[in-house]
Image 1 (tube, rainbow, N blue to C red):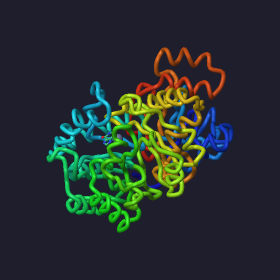
Image 2 (spheres, protein in one colour):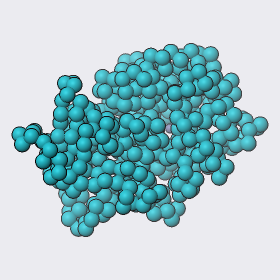
Image 3 (spheres, rainbow, N blue to C red):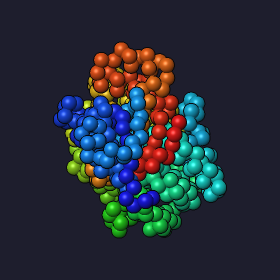
Image 4 (cartoon, protein in one colour):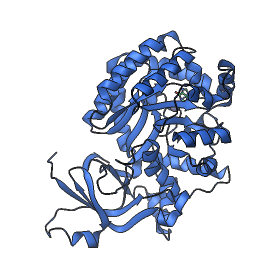
Length: 435
Ligand code: GUN
Ligand code: ZN
């Protein structure tokens, strides 16, 4: 890229400066009904009212204009499994049987680097179609699955976090490693990829039931030796899983304590699900700065439960939104928001469309400890943004005609929107996808 390249975009623009649940909707965001964003060398230079900013620019400056469209930061998906792309929508089971029936046989295929590359490319195409520009992603136990993922992400200049799965028990032989090989391969991958371009590495024990104490201790050792790596795992998703963890780790006071005992709680630790936790657990997550990936479509699909977002808010635990593909039923974070809203309705917790969009953007950036780089349009941030089309479908266009304000428009976009709404995706300012 030309180092001083300047790009200018004009549309409605919305982004978040704070958590709407903390400061109130009205002061959580900046909104420009006729907005302008200036991008220089891939970074946000300025965002504001078109009238104000245009006055500062040469009269002949070239402006890309998107009428009837809303520019927001690229969506951030805080937890999903790229190797499960092809088993989305697999019928009938809850977590533990679903893993055995569908997931493990499919993940076996990722020992083949060609298979891994093929699925990784399709996966990134799908992320782009849906406006997801950053994600925290599971590979498989095979190190080549992670190489394939990072190579594809690097070519596309995406900000991505991934890791090789660690699992040394309670899984088929063809899919297990050992604490020693897990250590060696994780270290090798982290040294190859962590901090290269926009890529980062996550130490990735699958979940407590498939990891021995020796393997969890090894994961803790990696975090001590490389303190800026991430830790990415599952926690308290399903009641049978929670009972199983009690049997497997009788000396621990609960599921979270299994991870805490091995030093796996840091400000770069992300725990997917967290449906069956108590107040002490939430306090411990808060104190350690760890975050939760909330996966509404997955939680409904596998019948796992309803996340208590209000409690996470009260106890000030970081929360990001996630699809959890392939247990999640859509790559779209708009569809995920639609189910997010419904899960919270069932708990009598009324989510505003501002809070929902915050969770899919700035909330995700904070959860992934990437808020200094992405998540909103503060000057200097990386210009990953998406253009949403208010006229994407006849129904959406018709519904929006009756909307009286931004709140109503955003809500309709979230309930009715999916990949059809994403008109274009920009990575570091450059158009990476066009519908
Ligand atoms: N728990 C352990 N592995 C998995 C997985 O692949 N998906 C989900 N949803 N939960 C898990
Ligand atoms: Zn998962």
